[in-house]
Length: 259
Image 1 (cartoon, helix red, strand yellow):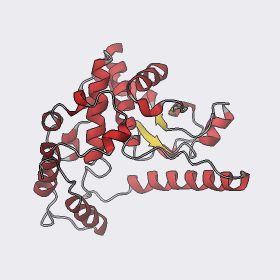
Image 2 (cartoon, rainbow, N blue to C red):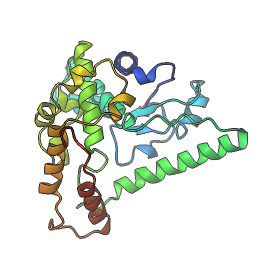
Image 3 (cartoon, helix red, strand yellow):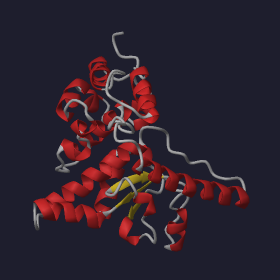
Image 4 (cartoon, rainbow, N blue to C red):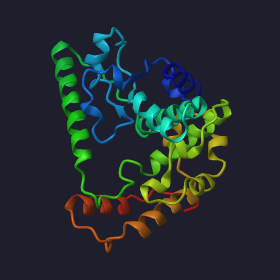
């Protein structure tokens, strides 16, 4: 499964050229504490999993990384579609593309430490931050907007990945990559329509170029309308964290084509 996912990602993400890509099965990790709050998978700092990779002679330098819980994904599929290998493959590829979309929202962090001491410190900090982030995410207040960490750049990257995967003959439902309704947003299909032909027009571009390109006006407008309608300040929220994130979501209005 992991080999198949890596092959697909290398076919459709030119930004991975020349880089190691670490896709780790959670069952192979000594500790699953990083999976707190994200049980099926998460986008990881490669430094946070470096010790794991070194112990298995897999470390090949800085590169993007993700962790997938293949056992839990298989259990989910078994519950709803017992023995359906096609659905299992679709689920693993969909979650893998979802995590890749997280990684493509920003440039990959490939900074190489200058010496051993800096390397050790950088790795230790990354491990602490990843564990703390996982624990914090699991304790976020229930009134926090569900779209936090799945904002417009993520949705855009996810839809580009899905289009490219389709062109590579990977049979994956778009909702397996990003189900926008889970985040209290309009449907994934609405976001696909609003994105228009951008995935086709930019199918050969790197995601770095996509990030630097202004999103279509209809796409940005749909996001802004969703945020304003769902997360306006008069929504019944009590926690300071939720109010902060709602304010940030409303403030974040990207410039759009035609404006």
